[in-house]
Length: 336
Image 1 (cartoon, rainbow, N blue to C red):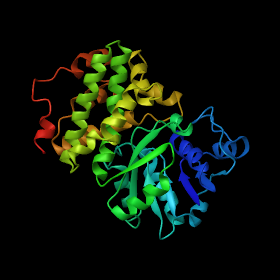
Image 2 (cartoon, rainbow, N blue to C red):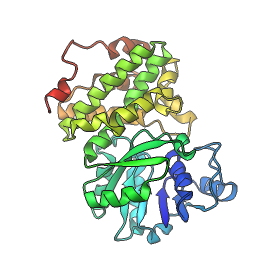
Image 3 (cartoon, helix red, strand yellow):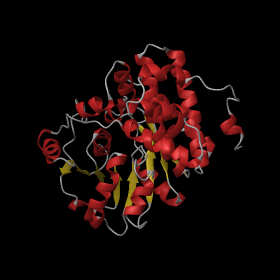
């Protein structure tokens, strides 16, 4: 079998390396011709996945023409680039194409989730599934044990794609809650910036634990308001991804928070690295989505103020946990 991946960043590259071990061939599209050339000639992608040797059955392209022969397409590009990439690839999609995206964010201008962006651009002609969860690219590429969730509306299609994507060290669970899985994946990046700020200021493990759980409450409140199942946020795309992103040294969003606490700026952080800090872009979209939905997102609000340069990390740090006393699980109790 063959599998095609659109996006040769860290996540797309890690999946390419993993599936090359079991698929006959993996085809991957890179926005940069230099990246495609490096993968094909040196079997590396040092800008996005350093230290990993690519199997020789991975073929990289800087054109999307190869999609004409592909049925299953994994869209592994950042949320803010998704619309642009889908516009480019849709002329090459087969009529029976199945699209699986792995983006974790909210489009800043439209406040749409990535699946909504894809469906809008393709006139809802193709099934769109979501692959999410605690999946650091560096560990996936090394075949370290990983579990993720595949969300979609068609249960028979979910089962079919689940079986294709399952690997010995890459376990895929299924979910019918597309909204919950996407909201969890998006907001956890913003919360990770908050925990990074707390870590950078030396606030300790207690503060990190509190921010993770109160961040979970924020993502669940917004998700439930948008139609998600509250129990989704106790799963891999909620608590699972939140813990991994808020605690790991691999986490770009947590590391961005630490850098902010040390005096850097988002502009400097995002220009110094080719890797995308999704939370820096998602904060504004999430905050506006909360306002439109009538949902309070106090942590997101404070992180957005830092990103916009309105407040310093030192100013917001005490505010992240200073909230009016209330029932801890009210966001769940109201919906059970």
